[in-house]
Image (cartoon, rainbow, N blue to C red):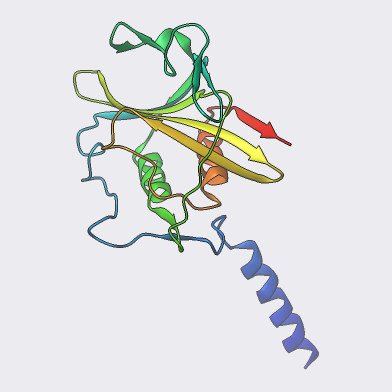
Length: 190
């Protein structure tokens, strides 16, 4: 009996360690009509995908965007992306793209929506075509209230986004950037 108790205790401990970072509020969207895949725009058009940290060009208040120097929230020169403001960047591998798609497909069980705020829009995901032009992007801003990390996104068009909100997605996105060597800027709110 003592051996069975020890084995069960070890199995419970091991199963606790092996759980993913997604909590009970998040689940994977497997609906073929709404699930994002490599064949979904903008992934199907992208020759490569970069994640970046850049020098912020604007600061968002709760109610509006306040411009600080360029009048834009994402660094642009004329109509092109201004890469001189990139502090770090990383091209996603196939495995990285699969991870990003998995994150996008995480959603709240209750279809919750969170209205986020962030102070420095300094991280982004860039979709680059075969002519080396950025044709879509997602700006990601992070905020932390207590221990929960939130994210807010601003996209180049309605055709691209990070999917439905769920409570762990902010932390998952922070981990996604940092695991690939791209620092995140997280605004802490008291």
